[in-house]
Length: 243
Figure 1 (tube, one colour):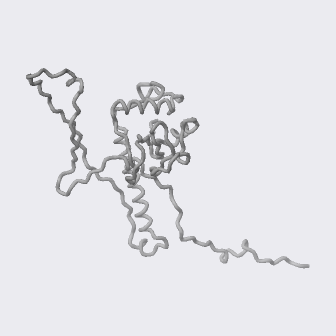
Figure 2 (cartoon, helix red, strand yellow):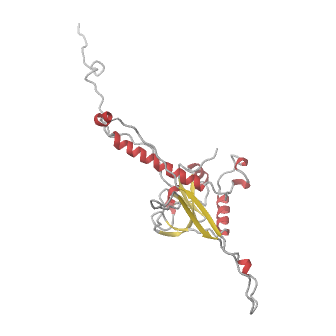
Figure 3 (cartoon, helix red, strand yellow):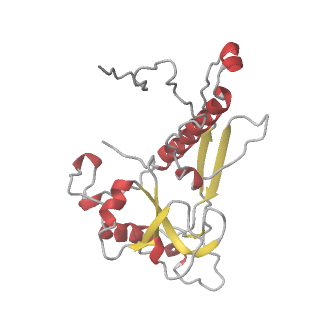
């Protein structure tokens, strides 16, 4: 009688080893979008932790609409300043690694920890800038609503809402951008930072123009996905979302 004595991987526990790939797994990384559009200022050492922004309010043209009377000095106007003050803040975390682990670990623990911390802080900078942008009071709600808690699921970002926003910006004489984030010249435009959910609602519209469909080669933004009515859309997974 013959007996099957074939040796297999099922019977050789100590011979069947696990091969270790030293290339560590990639992690999901955040693209910094908001931080590219916020103003940046450096505070010199020893000059406190607050930064002050000042500017003069423009004069009302209606106040100078009356024709001058010969030989009569008109009443003088007062200069009015606007003032914004911001306070510097520190952000950061750390990883505690023992000297024994650093000496004996098979992986580059310190190198990977440094990269993860850098990615974490980059996202924090983007969030801080985003929250400062969203703290403004110039808000347009979809569907003609006047408050966030009045919004319904049917109140979505549409081309009509984009046109309304462009109209408001133009009437307020808001300056357009004319360069990309690398300083290269491109045609004037406004910038809309939007979430993937918002662009999903817009991309079905026939007026939507994808980057790949632009008539002329332009110096586009990193993350730019399209444009509508002189508004360039830059997508960000970190766009502000309110419950």
